Image (tube, rainbow, N blue to C red; front, side):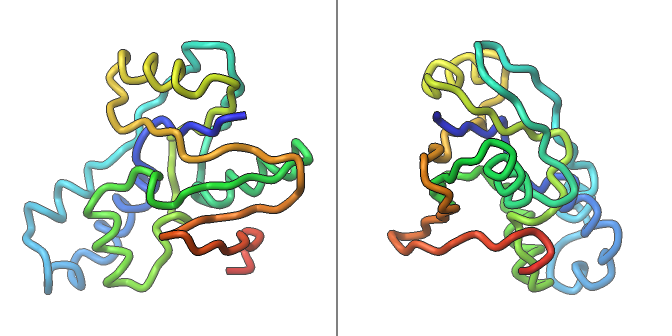
Length: 160
């Protein structure tokens, strides 16, 4: 099955970081940049084609991927570079030494479907321009994350 994400991950978490660490972030970023991040919220969406949807949440996209694989008895291969992120998310996480893939992803959805391209097209038609095919499920139980051709195994939530 193809794995599709409805839009940028970590938006709720980024908004929380902007509020909680406003003073520290202000040492490096403009007030307007921080205010913009404070307003981040994921939009809800429903599956426009036949597929399964999982709501991402407080444990981020990594937690959602782990939960999906455990519940379905499968593995996956995900290209981290294909997961949509906002620049503010990346920059705030770098400054605060956090993993953007483990930030609260709010209403972001992870979809499993046979035809990821059709789903992607349908999502983009609904205005989810940042939706992306990020990988696929596998029959083995390996939870593989790829970054620049290097494979690593995803650790369970809470053991990072």
